Length: 75
Figure (cartoon, rainbow, N blue to C red):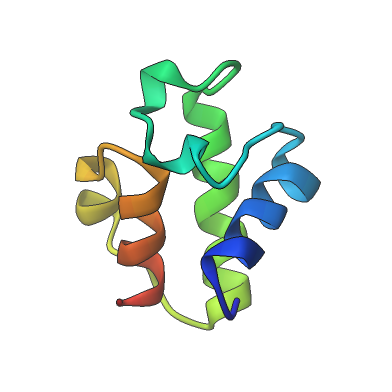
């Protein structure tokens, strides 16, 4: 995972959500179709792609996909 654009593509390809670059700044309740299963699936993919363990409490505190990306990649 090299960029936020790769993250957006992952959301589309692996979760089947049509997410734009602008959508990732929205809160989870504003994302059409988002649910907790998406979060668990996304975290699994992110750990596999980054080779890093993601701190679950930090991930659960992220209010947006953009902040979740930051938690996952450490930026």
